[in-house]
Length: 75
Image 1 (spheres, rainbow, N blue to C red):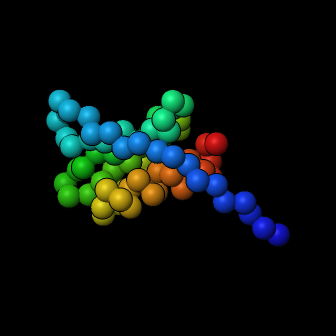
Image 2 (cartoon, rainbow, N blue to C red):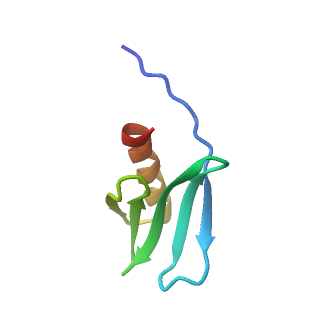
Image 3 (cartoon, one colour):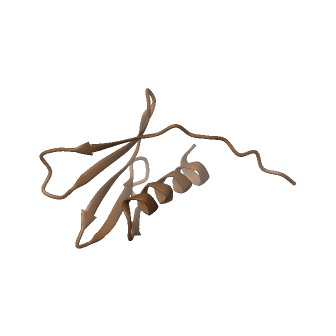
């Protein structure tokens, strides 16, 4: 059994004017897959479609968590 891997292009945009440092993770020309906020030194990612919350210790890990969640549950 093999699973085909595919690359997903994403953009990470910092959102200005928020109370917390916030980034939106989007698939260009398609849709947002989540928001990431820095809260008390950790990164809280909230999925756009299901509002699930994932915590990580770095922005990069948080982006990867969102992508993994999106690939497994929301595509």
